[in-house]
Length: 124
Image (tube, rainbow, N blue to C red; front, top):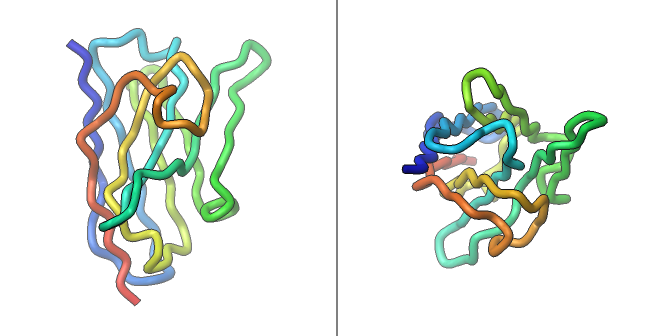
């Protein structure tokens, strides 16, 4: 059974940093692309970042709203994905979800497995 479990969320002030973790089990982790999405209250779930597997080296992609502030990474030995979030803003407040899939895409429907989410709240 596939499980994706996020952790690391919390309440922080604007300008602070957080590191989210996503622990995966039940999948051959190293063969999956990893992604992070978020959903703010009253809004649709949106793309944040993705890390794609390539023979020549992993590639990353970020939404414009987080580019330069967030960094996605993975540790295959620990079957975990991470989202380092720096210079947080109140508009980053959302539930953050990790996802795994065979497609490297910004589209939600492309991702196969999802975690339950972790709340990030940024106060001004």
